[in-house]
Image: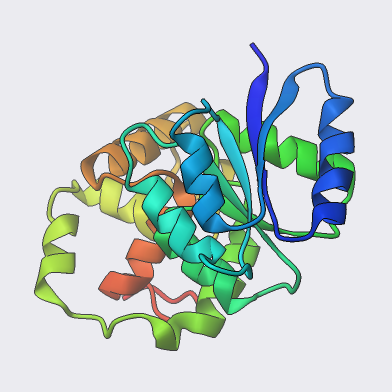
Length: 224
């Protein structure tokens, strides 16, 4: 079954370029387009979509608020934020709103296609090192650590799961975590899956955001 994609951007020319790239793929279909977040949400009422390519700076309703509203719906599509500038604060806000990752608009077509497939399969598409740089830069925007409700969420985790979460938040891949903790990569993947389930998180990006919000990791990647 093809991946059903919706393109959301106020620039028609850019949507046309993305549509041409995606249309050439046997496993992708552009099923909807929108010029702003409000139109995107309206389209989702009548069109089944798997992945939304979401611009952030748009009239009427920006991509961040649109992402927040979309991700709050039952069984929402995955959202991939598109931004013009690396480390854009809008991308950070988009990740907090529930997006599964972000990419630059000038990304090579092969990387964009790979990102869409990764998001569709449930993975995050922000490289751990990029996620860490993003959060380090914008950590002052986060609530101050030590808030009791946020720490209570972490109480659901076992000691091992908390350890794995810390390493995920510091930017380590599953393979690197496995080597660090002397575990199999499959075991690490299982732990990550349990962390996502217990904390009701969508993907590794959201794990990193929560780790920073709770103070489990501080700016600079250091664990408490």
